[in-house]
Amino acid sequence: MIVFVSAAASMTGETRPTPDDLIAVVSGWENFLILAKTMLVAVKIEPESLIIRSTREENWRKGLNAASMIICDSLTAKNLSDFQNVRIFRLIAEESLSEITQIL
Image 1 (cartoon, helix red, strand yellow):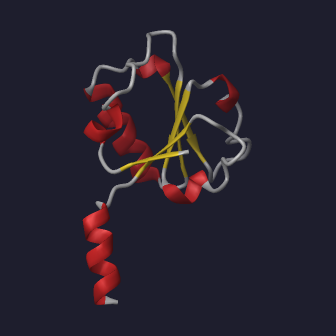
Image 2 (cartoon, rainbow, N blue to C red):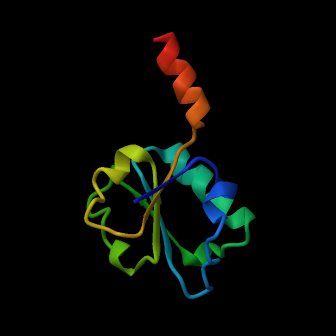
């Protein structure tokens, strides 16, 4: 499992997905699904190459085995430990999390 702090950082040293690769975006948070899809389409990933799954729906794991990469939030990643191709995208930078921890 790989954790990324930004979309740009996630691409460093990575091979760009081919048009035949399927990329799954999985989360129970609707805004995460929308944001991730928007960012992927913005970097010219074809919408047809995306599998969008909400963990709030029944059978949300359907088709994930076909994905070359699964993008999710940290909470969802806990339910995907049986997959090797999981990429966690944090919406809050590590520095911000540290600040919040210090305040609390």
